[in-house]
Length: 147
Image (cartoon, rainbow, N blue to C red; front, side):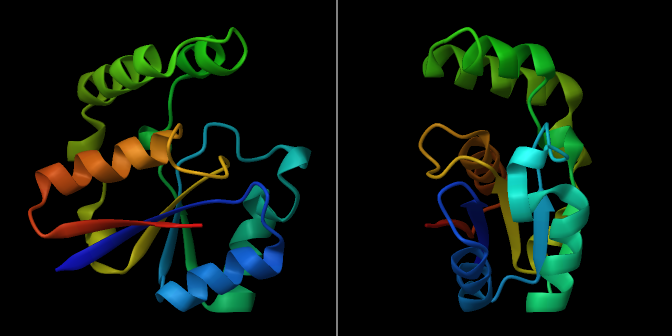
């Protein structure tokens, strides 16, 4: 059985974040954020995170924008206070329309991959939805949320 991990960087220090990744044996950090260049991301800003991941933990950093929500969908939920149920339904519909799960490089799943987003916990984060959808499509794939 293989494992796909998820992690959010919010409410974690860089030390906590990288210790969780190292402790789980993550080899590839897959960034599925819509906004990964914000100054508010601190150590998890795209360019910095790629360097930190490699230098501090020997972890490869890749981006998978096909697994991020659209700006409209993100804004409807985050900025206009949309419901989680509507977001979840619309997100899965978007992934199907894009063919995102079919386009995703499944070789990453064989390299102890971890999906990254910003939310502190997975309950209301699209990283959980992505990991669960891929697990449904690949029997024997277990999902573990690093917290």
